[in-house]
Image (cartoon, rainbow, N blue to C red; front, side):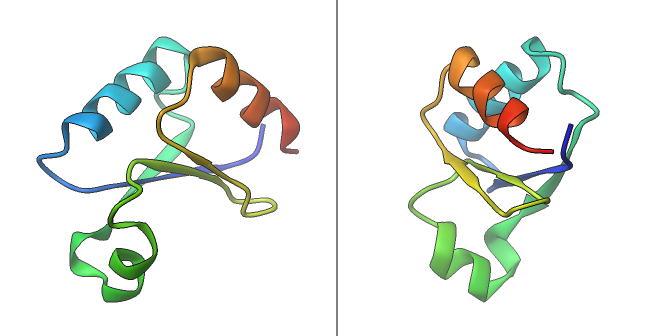
Length: 79
């Protein structure tokens, strides 16, 4: 399984929903969280799109909303 990056902002209910889905899918320890709020480049790229999950191997991105099935396909496609 590829490494995953979870782009989020604090106080984001959609980010909380996505994080809960990641945990329900058994991916609790499989991603690292990146708070975009203090990084201008990331804010410009993701501000209206968070949460976003990115595979580290090929930088493919999965934008919210996504289902558990879409998440499984995304993760399986990497690596």
